[in-house]
Amino acid sequence: MTFEEYQSEASVTALYPRRMNNLEYPTLGLAGEAGEVANIVKKIQRDHAGVITDEVRGKLKDELGDVLWYISACADELGLTLQEVAEFNVNKLAKRHGR
Image 1 (cartoon, rainbow, N blue to C red):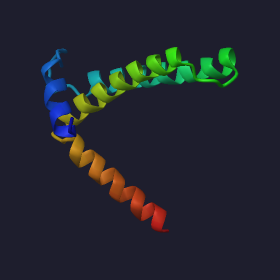
Image 2: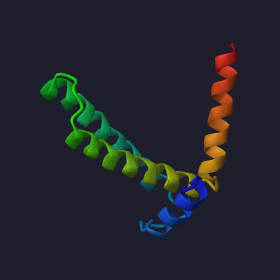
Image 3: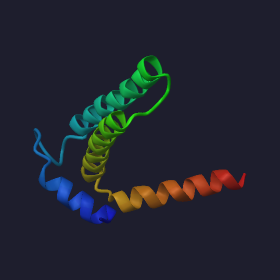
């Protein structure tokens, strides 16, 4: 699946107030989902001595998917594609790496 395919399919499921004129909703959702990822990682340290079990890996996969959905929705609200965001980021990192 490409970024374009993902963003197109995810967009169909984006049902929230004032869609396409509401950056706040997906931004707050992104923060919440990122917090869920961080909480799972915290519990890996606390409860599993830093060992990632298959069950925990599955939970992280699920939550990372939610993070990706909200990133896609934020990009939609800004009139950006995930491809544009990814390419910009890779170029920025390459410049930084070259320093």
